[in-house]
Image 1 (cartoon, rainbow over the protein chains, first blue to last red):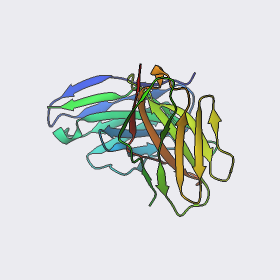
Image 2: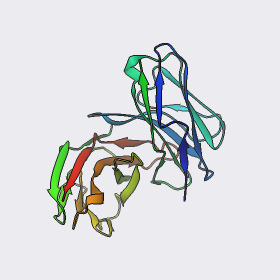
Image 3: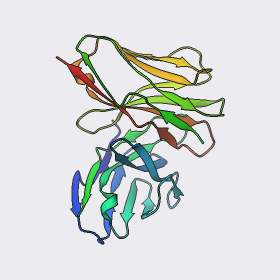
Image 4: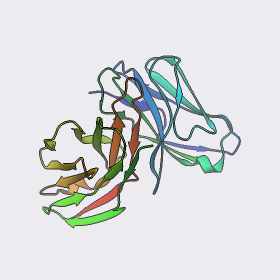
Length: 114
Length: 116
């Protein structure tokens, strides 16, 4: 089974801190994604990557950056955390070979910024 | 831009009943994919069912089936003989058929409660 692992299930940070959310997949997937999930807003795409060292902005990239130095790892960085970044963060990956492939998701990181 | 609308924020049904979750979308594309994803309380999102727009036949996966109406841009999910384990958040999603841009657009979700 494909496994997408997010490093933390719950995280509490202070305003202004630099925050790293890590995501690792074990199936040699080309594509990786970071989503933010908020009640009543569904999932919104922050950034995605379809290759090592490649990144593309999603719908809400402001306040975030990403890093993909190795194929299996995709990191989301909050340069200076703010309270409005309190949210559930979901990482996902897909093979990226065929069209219309399903996403494989991690279990999410619930981030609270105080 | 594509949009996905789920008009039912929350639903409750009795165990063993059949329930239908609604989804409409807006696109000018003719070739695309539609998905239903399930997020149980454990938060692990999994794919329930997938439909290719060029296929007229509605997709089915065991107790899950869709009613895909391309002209109406409607993609509803039917769960037959509902079980307690079906309690979850359900997201409808849309993906364009493009070369490299595999972004998926999600609806806001429907929270489904299956009551014993």
